[in-house]
Length: 315
Image (cartoon, rainbow, N blue to C red; front, side):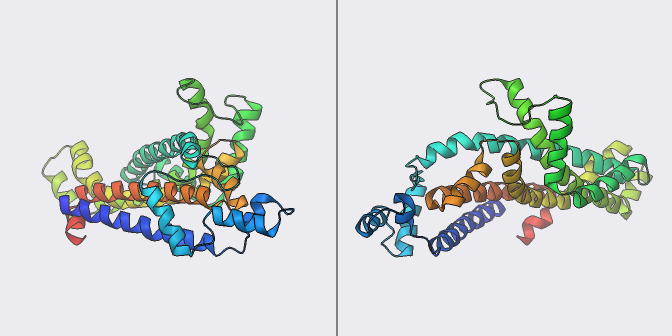
């Protein structure tokens, strides 16, 4: 298990390096005169050249990238080219908002998907099974932004159960924090539940058809032990893989949801700074997102390796 973990960590670090380099490369080839953008159209050519030199844009791209990488490895993400803001402080302020959404969505979608999918797989043809299949069709067919707007209209505007916009930090008011993230979490969780629960249902149904399950039942093993110790252990691996992939898709959904609910998170930061072409801020958003994806995939791989020793051997 240790070797398996080391391999996954090293592959994650390599992925971080590759994506950061490619992201910096793509941002550096933009046909934008940053000095002129920062100083305005009325700036003189010598002022523009001086500003570009101050930002280090007069050097080759590899030199710029490794300079940024060296500072990033020391925990210094730089400052905004346009506002002079400390990117570390900006990220530390916005990251808890996005983490609240992502952790909430992962917990809700994981728990609900496994419970509903397992029940549907055990009671195929029942009302829960039909509900899961209907939810799967609904989750894939209804656009996410439409569902989000519908939730706002019903539960925030009409019923006034939750605020329509804004964010309350947990330290300020735990109840207010919960009320401000409830609708965004539901909006993001619906599609994930639809996909993962279908996968859990199918995996449970496949395992139940295996000969060893029938043998365990014939030996008189209690049904709850058959399900908990054998069926779920073998059915969880594919479902966890789908849950990990859903997390990657949630990053894009978070951008939209944060804009609709006016949440000051990483997603809204990405929209603001990308429109300006602010490379240090964009790189911070990219790296935070990639680190999140790598960590989730690492946890999923470790969970699958623990559930299925064959996965560790094949890695």
